[in-house]
Amino acid sequence: MSATETRFDTRKFDAFIAQATTVIPAPRTAVLIAETGAILKQCVLWTKTAKPKHIARRSRSEANNRTRSLYYPESPKTVAGGTAWINVREAHKHRVWLRVPGEGPPRFLLYRGDGFAKLKADGRNAVLKENSGLVRKSEVVGYVNSYKSKLRLEAQAQKNAAGLSRQSWIHIAQALGIDLKAVRGGRDATAAIAKAERATPPGGNSYTNGAGMQRFNKSDSYLVLINKLPWNRSPYLRLDVTLQRALNGRAAYFRRNLAAGVFRSLEATARAYPGIAITAPQPLSQ
Image (cartoon, rainbow, N blue to C red; front, top):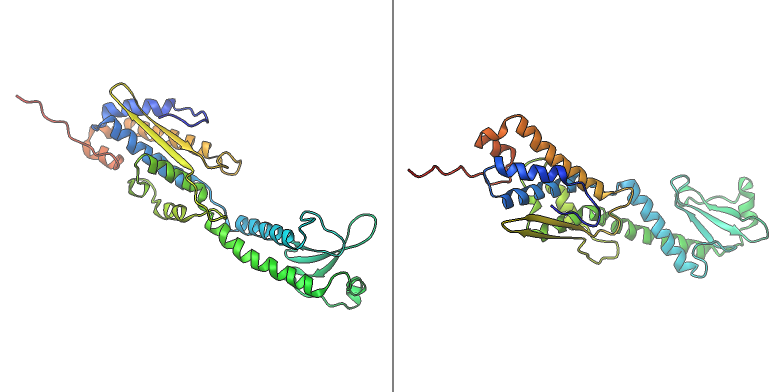
């Protein structure tokens, strides 16, 4: 098995494949393809997907950026005097602030409380009453409503994209002619694979983020796995670490079976490797 541009330590896996073909009664190509399917299936299960809190946080941030660009295109990342600002952080989420004009350090006026709650301009909020003419009420209401609308759309788009990190493994398998849903053994990955197949990027476009090549001849057999997911090396995902872990895991599984004497029995071998068609050796002709 060959690696992508990231360098992997395949010595344990290569040794496993070389030895496996001497104890498993099946063609080397069948063993290699079956084990690659098991590895890619495990990668799907181990690859992290965005958690609901991360989806919500990203949705708020994207919706806020889009709204500010719409209302304040001249200064989307800064707050000019009299313009609104929605707090989208976890603490005091969805408070609306107004920038008070003036020299010196920026000064903000709380216009709406948590969850866009309206504030009364009473004695406790004298500043609000004093500066109520900073912006037109209709502008703030429009700004808030625009944000809410974009938040609904963004939240759905981010939710739809949650399985993209796993989708690249499926693309690699498809390029190699492997149906991961049909890979037998190990944990059931049907739901994870189905979710990844349905995943779509926030922009709506579809991309092929994985590729694979195979070469089999009398002298050599190898597979090339190419993961093209743009953020596959991010600290959160580290898909290279996931693949290395899966490679080493299959090699260790083989060593345990070898030590336990699994390969002395065709039935035990077939149970341990259900993805490989085990063939009984033909008796010698008299």
